[in-house]
Image 1 (cartoon, rainbow, N blue to C red):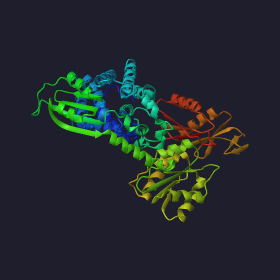
Image 2 (cartoon, rainbow, N blue to C red):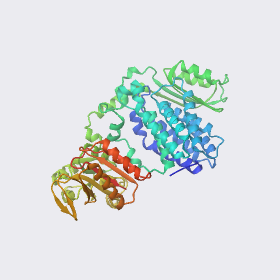
Image 3 (cartoon, rainbow, N blue to C red):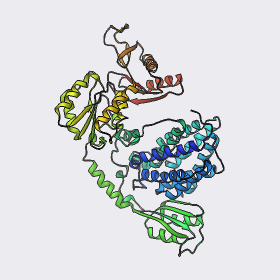
Image 4 (cartoon, one colour):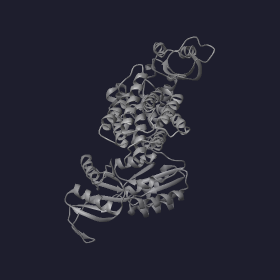
Length: 564
């Protein structure tokens, strides 16, 4: 999809998608939060701040993008919460000022606005620090500028910005020692990356199932180092907090009985910098908003009243919050890791049969609560499945066998337990993952089974494995130790070279279904490098194909593939 100009419809969709993306990921972003902002609410602050901006946009009837951007900036200013929310508001304050006179945005306009947002955000921070949201914003702006010089497509500009934000996010632990110490990326930078991701998805038409972004152990393995399973804040000492009160005020300038000074931004900010840190001061002609960590919250409030009336006040004791976090971490340590991975929705427990740590993580990521290790050549027994059902402790159980040879054992297990158990007849790992995208905790168990089984027709499943003997099947002559490409249970391809067999298998799958999403899961006998080569080749066939790669660690099958 090419977007030569961003009009009202595109801009409104960009804001809506990104607001939703932040909301769905707020808890995940919170889990990354780290000192010197130990209150652990970066995701909540950014989500609520952006939601305020989105509300102002939705209430604005103008079809002019510049005016919609002004509404976004005003809403963000009024709703900005915390350090991260304030910086986010400044990013879009600069963005909006740059496009104020524009009815539509060209690719160059978009890039220029992103750059202007970075410049405004850096000016708002008293002591800008690299390794934070500012770094992510700056790298995204640089990429957008570079791309806009040679592109007439807003999608390409936004994609460059989003991908650069992702790469910059990965570098934040190297730039900020405290992030490296506790093993996380910058939480504010993660939030901004989600915003830019939402912008790109809205412009490109890319659809992501929001559930894949819920905070799961799989997410945490990607974003948090393995040795840090406690919250990031739990890695720090309460006594390290120099300024203990996170203080926020909003002042309506010129109003109030105690006004005795004319507001001067530089003087105002300088005074507050002397009594605290993590200072942010933003202002327009009507309102000034302050976020500061201090030991003297009363002085901040009194000083604000010299210039206007206090219309919003928030003071949090960060030491008390941090002690609470430490207590919660101690309780969490008592819970086994596999129990922590359970994301039981309502009364449901969901069991999947799978082999490979990577595949287990993929299933946990879409809501499966219990994995039975097994599958081809390792079919679990009825007892194995009964034990798994009992271990869930749930009232309603769904079983994903992911192999037709496990259907009977699963059905038998469902008959001998005292629980409401249903089998979703998934024959492959890709079918199991697709079925989970249709699961709803609000639906009845029968409604879920019907919806999940209907979805199985939407995915074509492929497998690549090695022949263990010479044979002839369906007219195809197969030699021992050659690779075979199997599509929905039928051998379609056989040859000696694995990479070529995999590519030919994908070709055969695309002949069956004209889908555009190809997912490649590589096993313990394959490599990420080879998988990437295969993905690049598939992408070269048609630029509209979306190719995803996942590490599955599965035995027997070097590659599991789906086309949807």
